[in-house]
Length: 195
Image 1 (tube, rainbow, N blue to C red):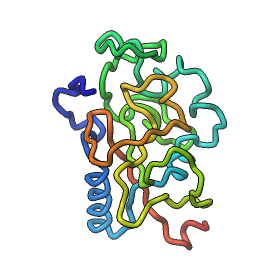
Image 2: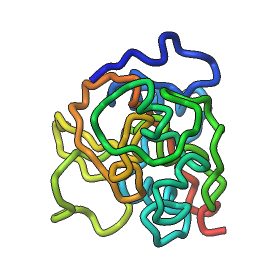
Image 3: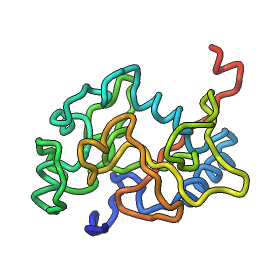
Image 4: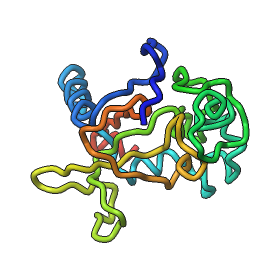
């Protein structure tokens, strides 16, 4: 599905239309440029950051109708512009497509756009369950790579059941879509992490 928005990327929009390899290459480039250890987050790290200490379905609570304060998801604005035949959040945020970064309330950790706007590539290979996954926060990957990777957070086109902290989907790692982007994680040195 490619409804064709934004027609042209704007400087205030999140990075989108990038494959998993594009996102990984950016993190590697950023690490070389800064001398710091940047990478894509693991699923465990991403969900911890998205939840921000909450135990509800979403960082702001269980109700999808509150999304328009906290996240750019498929809502009445999106449904009016793109009749996709799916449930919407029941509110209107005025952004039928991708919204500028930081337009919605931050979560409890001060992180913006963890839910909605663009779904985010994660380092993990996609499997339907968590069976066999590492018990720590490491990403689940296979030698030789994997064709399907995990997307987290939902996007501007996501119905309420896909726009929540635990929602995850698998996607072909080569996918480039206006509803898909990424964020990076930075490894702290051991001494600094313990402080």
